[in-house]
Amino acid sequence: MDREMFEDCLTELAQGAKEFYLDSVIPILTDVPSPLTFSRDWVSLNKPVIIRDVMTDWPALKLWNNEYLRKKIGDKRVTVAVTPNGYADAVFENRFVMPEERVMTFGSFLDIVEGKVKANGIFYIQKQNSSFTDEFKDLIPDAATDIDWATETFGKAPDAVNFWLGDERAITSMHKDHYENLYCVVSGYKTFTLLPPTDQCHIPYEPFQAAVFKERDDGVFDIIDDEKTGEVPWIPVDPIDPDLDKYPDYSKTHPVTVTVHAGETLYLPSLWYHHVQQSHGCVAVNYWYDMEYDIKYNYFSFVEKLLKLRKTSL
Image (cartoon, rainbow, N blue to C red; front, side, top):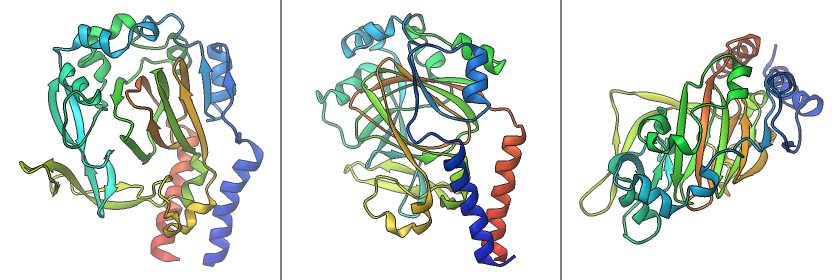
């Protein structure tokens, strides 16, 4: 098979998914689905959906403002990601750069987010090792440690439950996860740019030297290589970059942009690529359920190997 035929096959894979089963607009369910309906209509088809009323019994929807959070957990020490540009875990200056992590009281973090204290850099609570049940466990009575109908659907408890709060300038770079993700926005909004796994062949994915931001005493952020971690495969493309022409293949993808508002939950299926922006001070909790490594994953891995072949042999 020559290169042109190979590329045509990959393009047909992405285009066929768009024509036959993907939605051009993410649907909204006004009622929580039964586990059977959720599994049949969304999980098994690997299709995203917004669900309302997931959090109707959460006190958090009414309680979680800055005043309440400051009183409840203001003296608790939490982990905060700090970057000069708002991009943590992202490609910058030909490196995969992770944030500088600082431990501070939640009240001090709020002072920075509210502008009461001037600080260099952009601050974001984004730790993803089940931070909600660890660093924010005092807030558990206001929300939930799992979503019962989703836990029944997946047949397992969440691997992690994470708490998110930060600056509107904080951006989550384009990536994919091996998790079924239920992302609950409690206040503000999050804007997701989503790309299906079938767009894999048109999304650049390359190894980059791992590095970490580190602020100097003069306020300048250095980029320090992390030799122990070595290279990390990541996606360099930023869908909000005005200079997307430098990634010509990306123009063949099928992105869908959706804004998830307070009180809404996005089901983000495993292996979907996503890039996230947010309103200032947006608060969210997300639930990661480990994906099933079934035939869907086999197909994804098969295409992944074909793409490696394209780089080396075609």
